[in-house]
Image 1 (cartoon, rainbow, N blue to C red):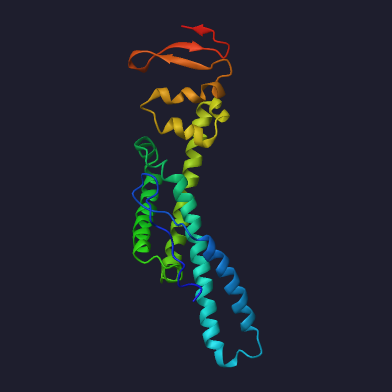
Image 2: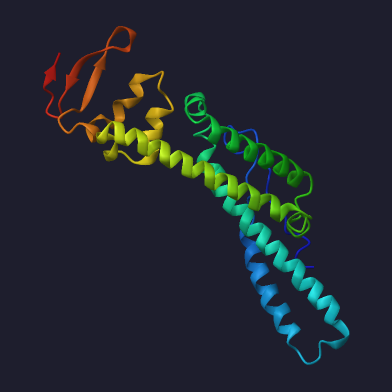
Length: 218
């Protein structure tokens, strides 16, 4: 009865992705922990005899739900980080193999979130046959994507050492907008100590360099 009202909240789409992310899992995680502890205590009870099969089946179901939800949230965290990166045409062009792997995961994510919206009861959806393995496969592919992305950023830093002054997210912001040179503006002072900003002229050609003290070099 405790599980009947517990549903994922998929009432609003996540940002501009046209899909959803899991919400409302906090109470479920707490209840899972409580029920697993209680069920395993019953499994060691001397009086479990008449209910042994039922207790073991319920314990197996709870463990499956817990593992599925944990893996699902792991995929969600990685998907939320990588989705805006691979939404960039520039990144997709520069990392075709990783882009293909991410799109495979992205398709799986969208299909399963659509299914979950139709059937949001947490206990029911997390016990769906094959769902746990599906999320494990997604984790595998996302790990490959993350590794490929990190290797790519390292090659960029090796070719221009000053990129080491930028975080991964800052460097990706630049690399994902290669058609817009003005996007480097917020990061110039980190890359070049004596430069605060630049002035772009026609055709996005740099015409002035301005120091932190306001001095201008044309």
